[in-house]
Image (cartoon, rainbow, N blue to C red; front, side, top):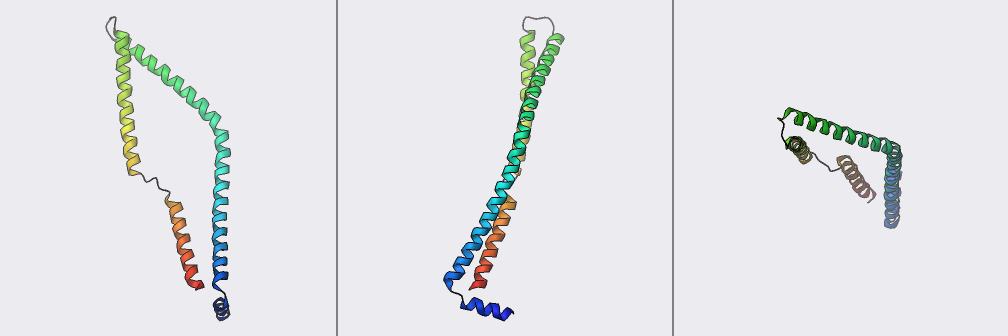
Length: 142
């Protein structure tokens, strides 16, 4: 059986081999594009459902942040001796506190981003495997 298929392959023209290879590549690309579209469609549908809830959550969290900041400023102002500048100094103090905390978070995030690899490794691996497969198929056809 194997000898017959080898004999058939030897009688095929280079044009028919190229056409078959082109068709296989086209089918492979179409399959991957269809998979990508289906995945993106599902993610988009999910995002459309989640986005309004996320927006409300962001607004409420921002409101809570502002209220806690004002409460912290009022606490600092209440702890300071009576002065015309105590509210100003309380706002400056809270601003410095938030700047330090924000700076620490940004520093940590920057370090983590520098150590993380943003290249889509799985996709590259699939494409490498496809390339190797195509090269092997081309060698087998000749």
